[in-house]
Length: 185
Image 1 (cartoon, one colour):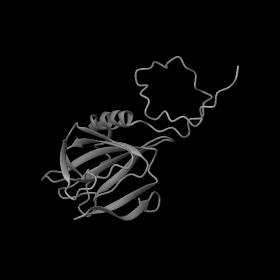
Image 2 (image 1 turned 45 degrees about the vertical axis):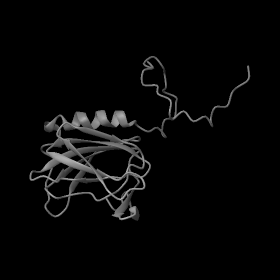
Image 3 (image 1 turned 90 degrees about the horizontal axis):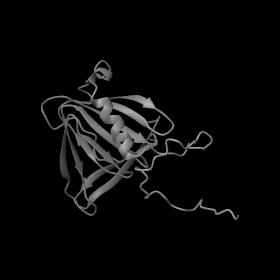
Image 4 (image 1 turned 90 degrees about the vertical axis):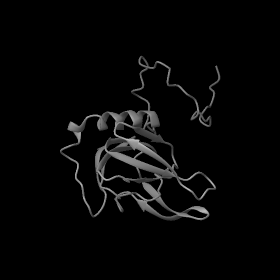
């Protein structure tokens, strides 16, 4: 029997979520390149956000800047806890090649996104219990536009190495800078 080389086959769009692989032994498989799915990240952040006892004693609020703390770092993902006082926001940014998800654990947050070739942002509000998954290259600005504080849980896969910053102009989003893990956060 001839071996078939499938190393160049792109299976990224194949949905295998309904396939039962519980009996498959993958202990010898190198999965160091693996990326957690948006769905899995959403489950992770949703579960953490739904259990305030797991984050209530950790979270801090800082009027001078948004507060954040990494909760978990593995080979394929990382999880962060963020707090938001009224008016605090991220500015437009992406997460490089990482996919991600965030869940609002307390309060409300507004996500602003800009459709391609547009100069006007769309707004979506997320309340406590809501989960927002997103793909690689997703550009958004997250803001606490309300009078009360908010807390959110974020996960990225693979762990962040860079975030690109953008400015919204009359012509749309313009890349302004790139921040790097371990150097800027």
